[in-house]
Image 1 (cartoon, rainbow, N blue to C red):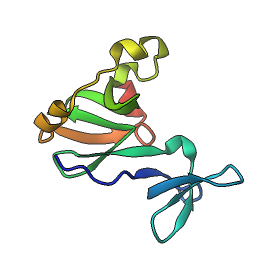
Image 2 (cartoon, one colour):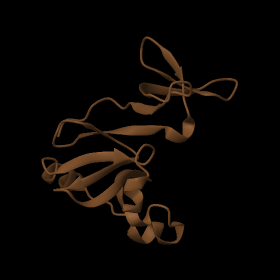
Image 3 (cartoon, helix red, strand yellow):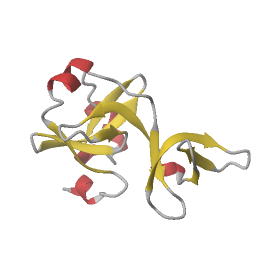
Length: 132
């Protein structure tokens, strides 16, 4: 498994498009992402870190993405303490069952199933996937 540089994505505050790069909080309390050439004002609630992993189609996997394994078992990708974790979509908004249902697959799992998992959306653009 080849890990890439840590980077982030977030929605541009003005255009609503996803932008990618490195986030910073300005002296005025606003959040921006620098992509090396440009600076974008972002919506901080949409900020998600790149996991360093790609799905079977080569799509980068970010925090907040919803993945499936062979089209089943939809899970939300989250950062929990010191590792990437998965939350079943049906429990994503249920704070009482958050800890009970959070799954911590090891690095071996990500490697073993990398050719079987697919990013099907994210919790910002595809809230309907959380309700199915």
